[in-house]
Length: 113
Image (cartoon, rainbow, N blue to C red; front, side, top):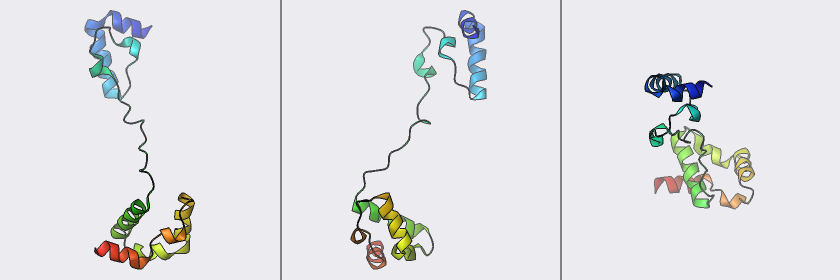
């Protein structure tokens, strides 16, 4: 009923309703938007609802992410050879074999290159 009232009194009520919704961070009810309004301005986005999918798994991608971890965290280079970390990677990607995961020496050489 309130939505209909807002639409019927659109000259004054809609602007107040719109302003209060914006201030309160509330999504306007679709029935409260007067017909003929530019819906491109009114339409809400799905940005907050979208979940970014991780890129497809590749061995090169794994190497890049591990290098980023090593470079940004102190002493993380030692982490790569820890059995628990290697098991975690294999758990996250079951098709990954132990030989697919680079060791500390390969990682160091790749970072320096």
